[in-house]
Length: 286
Image (cartoon, rainbow, N blue to C red; front, top):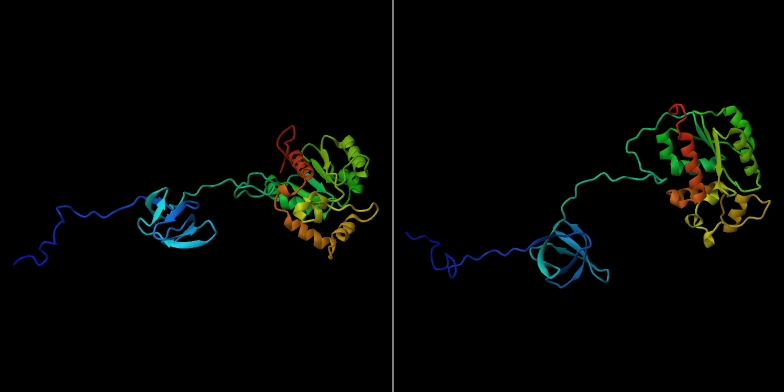
C-alpha cells in the first residue's frame, strides 16, 4: 500500500529544501535606537518587559512592541531583539556622606580617649549626619561644649595628652573676635594636644549652602548687630515656626559634605585627622 502522505507535494520543491529564515539577535539595551519594521515606529529602547520592548519616540510617545523574530531594524539591518543578559554583580565602592569610601560591615570601634568638641546641639547633629559613619569606624566621640566661654576650664578637666587629644570646632572664628582670642590662648598653652578650628559663620546654620536651604535670593540674610541671629533669620525669610523647627527642615536637606561650606568641611576633616593621628610612642589606645 502506498504511503498516504506520498505524492507530488510531499517532497522538496524544485529539488531544494525550504530553509527557515533567521535574523541576528541583538540585545535590547536601554538607549538602543530601533525601528519597528511593521509600523515604521522609531525610537530608543526604554526597557524590556516580558517578551516585549518599550520604545520611546522623538515626541516622547512610548509604545510596547513584541520582540518577534526579525521585527526590528537596527543600523539598517533586520534583527531579532532579545532581552539583555544579566550582568555579573560587582561590588561597587560606595561613599559615606563625607565622601570617604564606605567600609562594608565595619563595626564601630571602641571609643578612643581622644574627643571632638562642638559648641552646641545643632553643630553636633550636623557633624553626626555627614561624618557619623567615619567617626564610628575611627572610634571618635563628638561631645557638646555648650559655649566657648567654658573651653579653658573644660580642657583642664579633660587633661589632654599624647594619647588623649582634643579637637574643638567653634563658630565665628574671625580676627578680633572673642572666639579667636580664646582659640589663640588655648593654642598657646596646649598646642601639642589640642587643636581649635572653626568657621567664620555666626552660627552653624550658615555652614549649610543657602541654595540647599532654599533661601530666597540664594544667600543667608543679614541680621542687624545686637539682635539674636536665628530670630533675625526666621523673620527675614518669613518662617512661621520656631528655630528648632527650621533647623529640623534645614538638617533634612543636607545629604553630603557637598551641601556644606568648604570652611566647615575642611575644619572637621582637620579635627578628625588630628584626634586619630597615632601618638609618637605607638597607636592611640582604644
